Length: 147
Image (cartoon, rainbow, N blue to C red; front, side):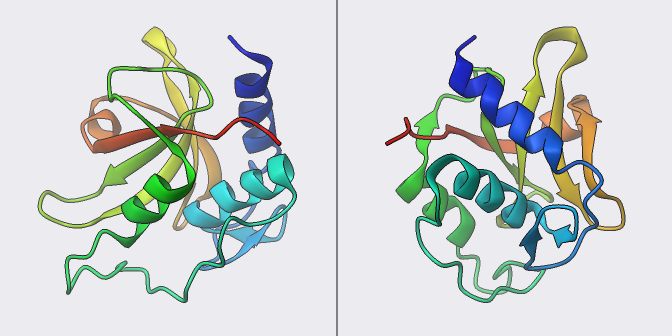
């Protein structure tokens, strides 16, 4: 496992316990799932790849636009769903037919697979990547190599 992937997981774990706050990205104070990934990006690269537009919690479900997925494709490196590695950014579709609107960081693979994510009502937590979560994954990405 590469040092960069371990660094991503370690950075994500520093956010555990941060309360869930919609559209926020401040470690220890509040964040949502996008804020968690953007916070890790900032730690790795020193800034944001693009400013996120204001967004609602339903992430454009009415129009069916995959804004989050398109942004991930612009700035992260797409991977096959079967290419499991720690440090990957996971994109989830929470309901069949809905837009993909949840993100997490793969923190362990194998029988004890886990991911770190900011979850409404719970904050940033490390959860088992069991069947109910695993079947919702629609895309997998990795952070680009550092500068």
